[in-house]
Length: 192
Image (tube, rainbow, N blue to C red; front, side):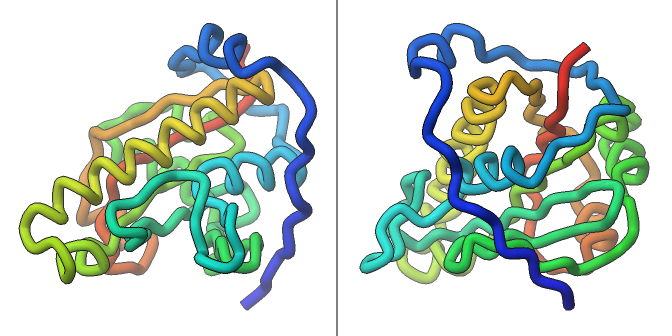
């Protein structure tokens, strides 16, 4: 499998309060305008990147530092899995699945127009093994933290994004060839 090493994110741009004020849900994307690797790198790092090498802490908090989430990225050149420990992408497929993602999300067609679609998946056992049934709640809270980071990072980069929770879980798992549970689908792109 092909592995793509990402560059560290650049730390210049908007004031944090501006980002909070400007964040909006965007459902219309310029499908002709692609995201470069530097922007993708920042988006992934902001979502779930490592901030402390010694302890493996990340940009998003996690109950008991269990980090049950896995981040997938879907683009026209395939499907990738984010490897936070290396800040890299592992190519797991060459298929462009964005159109199927839109279909499996009850025909929310804006998903297929976004140049990048992030999918936040979860391995619940990482958290429930410590916290029992209550860990299910914690995993969803963790996903909310990571998703908000992605939405704010998109705004910081003058991109649009939309958190999507309406989709067929089993079809998403099948197309990604995984047993992980899908929590969010978040298309990201340049707004019209």
